[in-house]
Amino acid sequence: MKIYSNEEIRYIDKYTIENDGVSSMELINRVARGVASEVCARWDSDTPTVIFAGPGNNGADALAVAVKLIESGFDPEIYLFNIGGNKLSPDCRKICDRMMEVPEIRLTEVTQNFSMPQLTDRHLVIDGLFGSGLNKPLEGGFKVLVQRINESGASVVSIDIPSGLYADANDGQIFRDIIHANLTLAIQTPRRSFFNPETAELVGEWKTLDIGLSEEAMNRINPNCHLIDSHNVRYYLKERNPFCSKADLGNIAIISGSYGMMGAALLATRGALRSGVGKVTTISPRCGYSIIQQGAPEAMFQGDHHDIIITNIVLKSEYSAVAIGPGLGTHDMTVDAVERFIASQKRPLVIDADALNCIAQRPSILYSIPGWSILTPHAGEFDRLFGAQKSHEARIQKGLEMARTHNIIIVLKGRFTSIIRPDGKVLINSSGTPAMATAGSGDVLTGILAGILGQGYTPDIASLIGVYIHGLAGEIAEKQCGMYGTTAGDIARNVGLAIQRIIDNDR
Image (cartoon, rainbow, N blue to C red; front, top):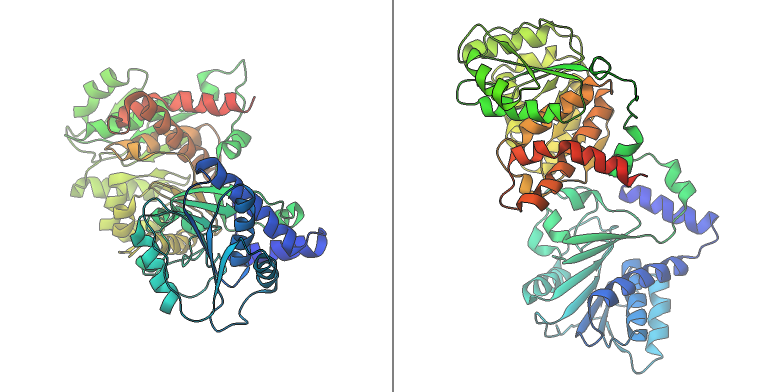
């Protein structure tokens, strides 16, 4: 799914009106029908309802929603803010004038002083103050109004986007001055800010309303941001030849483990084995032999000459993909080995966990990483690699810079894992669950990514497929084991089921 910027959405709106024979008023009515339908499905008509409408077209949407709700038996209080007078957009003015002609409609046009209605946790608030076109923080009376709404405990439905929230970047925003919605009904597509951990809680649950904007206009635009869903993954998944053998499905190595951290190596190995790859070899210190052979007997084992750490990385076979990092530790001899190994490689690698921490100790290694390698840091590892960042948005921007500079793919792990590519694209993963916030989950992802890459997918496609499968496996594991009881081993065990679900749902 494409995630459009504000500028791109404005272009699509304008194109729809000018080329598809759709008036701006008709688009407003489509929004109103969608919002009212959703509200009526969730709340009874006797729910005390207050609608706050701003002076622009988001306010026009809110007024049109009010009309639809009244037709459905609701009796909302409606406040239209036109501070100073003559501030309303043409469509907002037109709807307001029509509503004023109906005495039964409780509409107050606020031009000067405003008395805040009493809101309780029984109330439903429809937020139509400001939409995604807002480009400066709320101030004055609007800021106070938003704070009062947030403090009231009322259920809040925001039209398009919570008032005060920017659609794209929100660094520097004061979040108490932004509506905290329970439900956001986004017009046509979600916005990028819905997926940032700092702002996602302001959005609450979100759902898109398809109002029939021009498909031609949307197809003309290739935005920098996309949301990964099962259809994207199914499109790229290859059909397995009925006559294939393991030799046809890739042969990968996972360089991982050290004394006390062999669990990471085992989890990565299990993730890889479930990914569909033909053969997996785990390269670890000798202390890992029994652990890998007993915990993942389908994998082969190659031991370092050292008993408890990796000190010298030698590939004894030709591998279609190599991952490095889970559980390696950061002993000086291991850092030396990682540096020598990365410098010797020409094909893309999957680099995770302690391999990233080794690089953070010697940043010059970044310059020898093979092009289009996949790096998989969580926020802490990212900051150690590229410098401390104050927010997720700042990490995305820094990640775009680093991806271009080093020609790498950065998989920034989190609730909505972001794939940051050297071509400037950001892909946001839609699968996953908070149940995956458990030790070893990232090690499983490393194994999956290596397994997918080893089957002949390009690194950009392998990263897209891998992160979605990983998240879906976590969702399946949560249903089996619960939000609190899911472990990384449960996620690894369900990787194959996740792939099968993607295939089956497309039939």
